[in-house]
Image 1 (cartoon, rainbow, N blue to C red):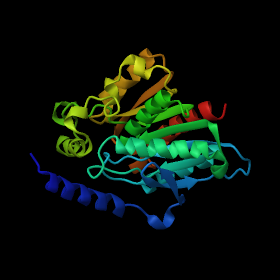
Image 2 (cartoon, rainbow, N blue to C red):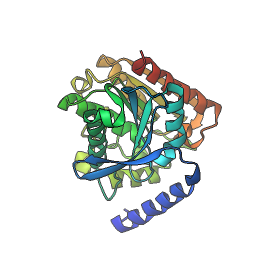
Image 3 (tube, rainbow, N blue to C red):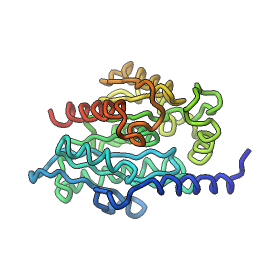
Length: 289
């Protein structure tokens, strides 16, 4: 078993490698800091180019195994959504594990959405026309924030985008489906060790696939994307089926010939373009109708 200090060393190394890939000079989003329950959360905002007030807003939640990543990683995608739909996009820089374990990330994202919806004039957005979505870990966070919003009844979403999300953090990675090219089990286990406490692993706010059907009822419509070369695909597809069973309008598709993270990290692939279209068409259907 790897010790906590060694795990943190590995995570910090992964963070540096991921950050090094960002072309910071080309980042389009503008940095803002939004008040939350424990201070301020950094975000990148992509404002609608339309000068009308009260535009729809999409909250983007980046991936990175809950331990790394930033809104800059999603800059191309966030800008694409803004340009294609002429809406405002806010990409959220939630706090990361292992320094901050679950559910700190969910609280950060929830608080950002709440503040923006309660101060809609400041952001020139329509609080009754909001969507949320994320890639990988961001998909997990997004659907949990939808559950939180349903329970607290302070705001709501028109839809949720779940792009190859990890939704079962209780089952050991070595016991999951694996195919060459997928996330190595030893890396996935580091992510899990960093992110959740063992006694919390099957809580629906950590592993949404274990949510009861009643907990999923009345969640916003879902667009679920999975990919062939990904150990997370089965749990995401199972979750899509549970959403359907709960009466949630759900569109799901598996993309073949690609691996986890493709829509963001391999932005120019034909399958990535198809995935972008699926997500944008979903947002168009629910936000612009």
